[in-house]
Image (cartoon, rainbow, N blue to C red):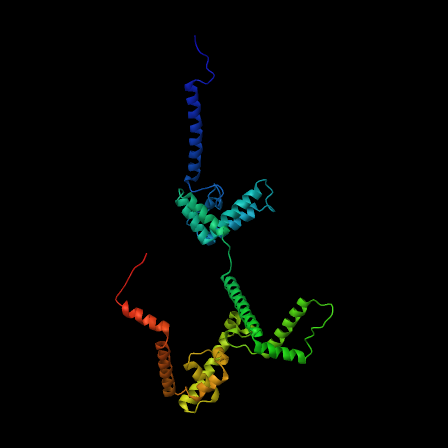
Length: 343
């Protein structure tokens, strides 16, 4: 007795699967055929050839392409052509011209036509030019300089405020600031209706203001000047270059040609340069130390060489009496021929 079957016959199922596979194959085949000529939907002129849209050849010059575009644009402009497909045709012509008028864009399009199998590469070249921002290099440079200038000024302001805070904690400066504040009648600890914390904050602000008026912070912690930031340095660099040239010419004329003695200002300049000190570091040095260096006449070559030798001997003496240096010398003596590699 035959048994009833609720499924389709085996041969029918195979037929359906084969038909489905054929549909997928045909779809893939159509996709490959669509791109076999280098024409991809969504890129450039889509499935139309941009050269054919403008009725020109691949070897046509840019000037001829412009003339062809103008002719077709006038013919199919929606304001002059009232046919239903005029607007769509006009957009197609404009798109084709946008592709072919740019040399790099046209080269990428020609490459797509010659290499239809490199689909992902075509997408990359197409969208790179449209997504990548077209920013003027001058704007980028200006923004970069501005950011650096702002960071410079903020950093210098932070250093200056840190120096003021440190000076305000020193008993010597704090006592002097309080004395000036009392003379001016700025400290009043008997104010009624004011919290103790508020009085303390007001006193600190007053002392800080007085300290800022009277103290001269020099060196790397000096008060920031807007003229020192990168923007002004670049803008005024031609002027400073001219001024330096004039100064150098005067220097050569006075001291090399005429053989005059160095002025007091120039003696200080030569001394500072020989010691490799910046102007800020020189000003930050105690007055007694600067006077001592100037008294030794270090602008004279022989005097400077003698001073340099003395400093080197003094450094050797300090190192010889240093416990850490002695330990280092013993270590080097005992391990001079030893080399180890550690993982």
